Image (tube, rainbow, N blue to C red; front, side, top):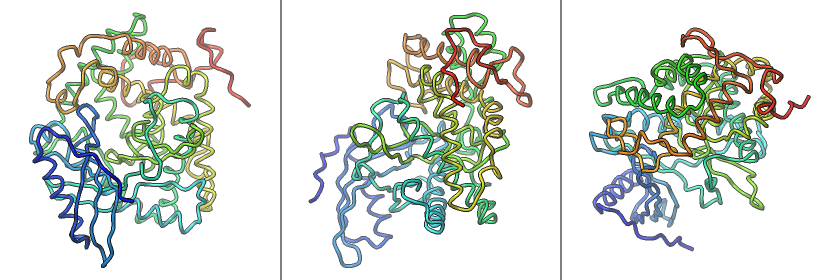
Length: 443
């Protein structure tokens, strides 16, 4: 039965027609004929998507038969203002590379080594993609048709976290399988997975995100209640968290092909009895070859609350490593060749400050009382209430800073930021004050 889509309600109907035309053209190149497209909006102002995202019901003929596909259409914006302050070309080219080259390789590897369904890393099917300048477009399977949906909240519970880290272990495992069994192909792909946001071009100026970093840092420091903590954060991060973030993208010893933006809103979950049983990662626009710890800290910084961090951090680290180990074993690889559990702990320690850095940069957007478009703030167009600290922002800032000062596998040290030096060190649970002690790590 055909899906009934609501009519697209847009301020400018010509945008919808332009999307239809781009979609029709790329699918026609793939042998679709007599194409009819119905659209409904898939993103709205403030969602943070780089470009326009819509749901589409596409019907037409292919190879003499009628076909109907439910898709998500991602189109790059043509507005020069957006492209000047967001690295649109790089981001779309990166995701197109991932779906057109990396996913097919990963799919074949999972077939070759007979990865069981319970461990298989799944991806949305890519029906078509084109990286022609100003006309970049990606057409993906709508996973909602397979009963996948977003989690209701961006701060997720333990069950969602556990599933997310198991999937992350499988995703990173695929990178190591490729490196082990086809080193030349791996070495050809990785140089294409470098920086996206911190490289200016004729089209894009990265100064906007760096200026935003300074403003976000000032707001973050002003929200910290404890003066000693203010100085610790200031000395650990320096003046600009954007510079620190770039450093951690480039540092680390346990590197693989990473997602690059791994948090709850870039995962779709399948549920049974209201509990998550599967997850599929989305949005590979920031996929990078970098430290595997960075993906872990994206999820920690953007999708956990203080209770989860204090009570389950070590257990979740084990979940990730066990998932990575189990996946690699099906390809005949001992996980210890690439990352022992102790090496993972060391990598987590050395990369830990990236989590605090991400918190500084994203919380002003996540907790704003006003709708924020990233390209607008990177262009210096801040909402009038941007500097106002609401209770949600203040609570999340102080929870995260307290965790970094007292708890877990890190503790901020009180010295000036130096990218070549460790910014955090392990802290024994006994060093934490009584009210900050987590549940003891199980042996």
